[in-house]
Amino acid sequence: MQQLLSKTRVLVVEDEIVVSEDLQQRLVELGFEVAGAADTAADAIRLATSVRPDVALMDIMLHGRPEGIDAAEHLRRELDIPVIYLTAHSDSATLQRARLTDPSGYIVKPFDDEQLRVAIEVAPHRHAMELKARRVAHWLTATLTSIGDAVIATNPRSEILFLNPAAEKLTGWTQDDAAGKLCAEVVHLVNQITGLPLEDPAARALRHGLVIRLDGDTVLITRTGEERLVDDSASAITDKMGTILGAVLVVVDATDRLAEQNGVHALTRRVVQLLGDEERQEVLGAELDAFAAAVNHDLRSPLQTIAGCSALLAQSHREQLGDSGRLFLDRIRANAQQMSRMVEDYLTFLCWPHGQPLRREAVNLERVAQTVFADLPFVPGRKPARFVCETLPQTWGDEAMLRRVLANLLDNALRYSAQREQPVVEVGAIPGEVLHTFFVRDNGTGLDLANATKLFEPFQRFHSVADSPGSGVGLAIAKRIVERHGGVIWAESQPGVGATFFFSLPAKLSSVPNPA
Image 1 (tube, rainbow, N blue to C red):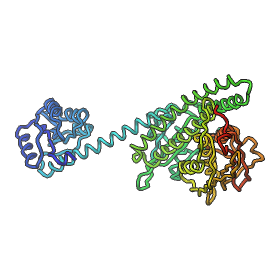
Image 2 (image 1 turned 60 degrees about the horizontal axis):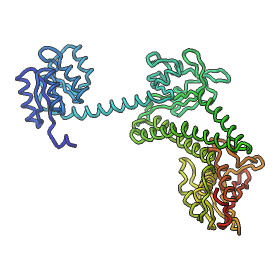
Image 3 (image 1 turned 90 degrees about the vertical axis):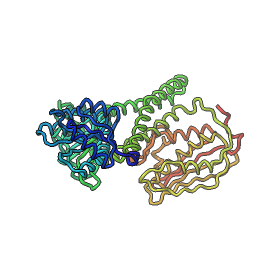
Image 4 (image 1 turned 180 degrees about the horizontal axis):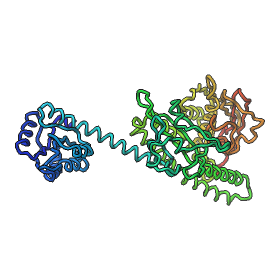
């Protein structure tokens, strides 16, 4: 905006005095400001550094030598000043060298005033756009280079254009060696069980225009013949008109993932064993604290980094990523958020009630239920549920803990009823003298309780992760909290007709257990 309100300042670099004086006079008559004039490359650099013009008119040949090219390169690279070349004629080698400096325009002598005016007015805008494009390209290249997963880009013929360092390391191919080769040759995939080769996922994505994901039995054969178990996804890259520009392939080495899963399973078995061993309570507390500290440090810190970087990427550069880039970004953010919730649930289960006393206060559970349901995150693609909350009697206990019970039960109800045409979630109560009985009911898929004897034990699932993602400890946390309040929790359900979870809580202060 400032440039629009003031005159464009032009530096003239011309070794012919008469031509330079004529050029300066023309500039003034056209409404521009002459920031200075120089007749050598050294003077041009010195003067540009001092006065910082908006644009420089640079004669390619200064005193018979192409010194203008050297000066132009310095002005563009070091001072970020756009340069317009002035030339009468030159040999092809000199012109080719001049093109490498990314000039913002050429004016061929002799030139008229209109040609001069247009070139000068366009140059700053073109230079700004090119600078922005270079910065975006540099940023995207740096981002792809720093990503830990293998990223491979192809043209519409599935020929390799780009491999990031992680892709070079995983496949054994360098960027230079892979460029121009078919993706199937560089990313050689076979089925682990049958040994049969798999079709190039990039070619499939280009052919169908869809996101392609491979199953869990996919093995990558590296350039050296090593076999690596991998997870894989590919997507076509299109422009705004829907024209396919190429494909991007993301390959993740699943070897470490399997090792981590085995480690998690071993830790889970260890935790369950510790929780059931009443004779080792002191050791249990120490080991659980150490395990919780390890989870908190080793998982939460990288998750926060992933979430923060992906949020910054979405905020600043989402529109520049394209459809496939935004898809991968959304997947990263969604999985990071889900993993954060799982870590939080694990830590809550492992640490509670250790060091957390029970508060004894009047609780308006109806208000809590309304607030919890309103705060539950909306999941794209999930049908909104109708929420029915009856008038609930006042109960006594720790409001923060009871909020956690309702959050877990209401979240379960929403997930299990999501496939219904009209999901319904209901909260009600059966008043009592000593204990009130509250319930959360849904019209979802229901449970086969005959095969769900461990319903309230940690790390138990009765639906697949894909159908009902969660940490597997929500009901166990709810059971601990309810029992800590002197109540009990149970479920009634049949497959296909929904489920009702009942839990009892104190009806009066004297029924609340003493704080621990």
